[in-house]
Length: 63
Image (tube, rainbow, N blue to C red):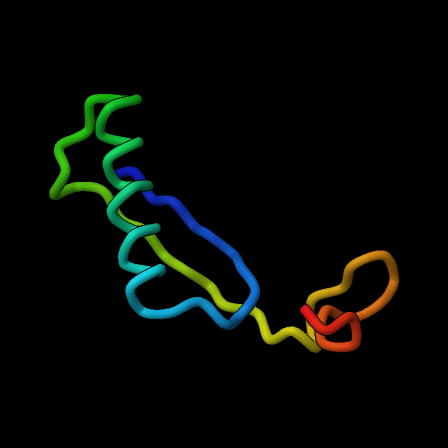
């Protein structure tokens, strides 16, 4: 059972997250020949205040 864990900053729409799940699943199926029903994708959203870029939080950078 392949498992892909995606970590990204909060703020994506439900449609965007659905697209990530679909495309990552398809990439795994194509790359390793896993049955689609065996692929798992987990999206972890990190608050902007907890995401640092160059020593500054993404929230403070206005991202």
